[in-house]
Image (cartoon, rainbow, N blue to C red; front, side):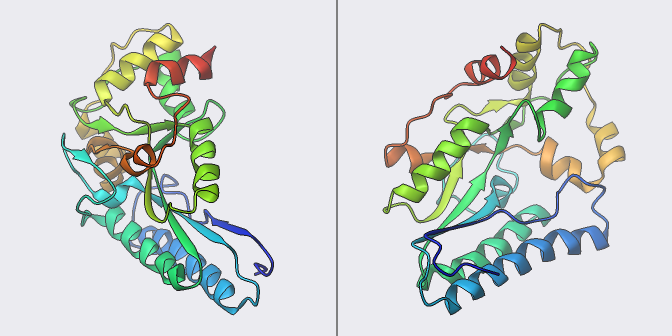
Length: 244
């Protein structure tokens, strides 16, 4: 792995979470793909004669576990479910680089991108006039526009005071009910066909609760405190830009 002479190292490696049900083998692969890749990057940086000025490593807001309606900032308690455990071990591996260089943990929420990721999958039922809330609809979804995600990563690279965990989410988290209503408006479709929780658990298993049904109201506290300005702070403006 070549990191010699690099000013910035960004590690986003990890097996996709939604590639299938979380069997024991899949869980092991999800964890190992993240931790081992991060350990390899940290080792390479520690052995370099010219070390990078900053290291940014992927993580996710799943590190907080299920948090209900309470506001979640970077210093909030961490969770204990499978996804939170993966993120904690992932971050622990990354923070081993803190003695080598400035290290930032990119705790990413739901990234909204019309061309990839989760949004096209979420939009498909609405395009077919079969969309609606998921489960109770009361769980919080913390999202960020792809453009703001890229801008915040660049800002973190350039802002030397930023280190440790960083929530990459917009300042306007919404409930799933609010999210699906906004998506319906953006697509000019109704939101009339809710997806029951039991059906999602049957199809997705443990992943349904960890990624869809359990909410967390995550705020970008550190980014806002240190002066980052969002281009798309509210969901309606973000979706309008994507579907204009």
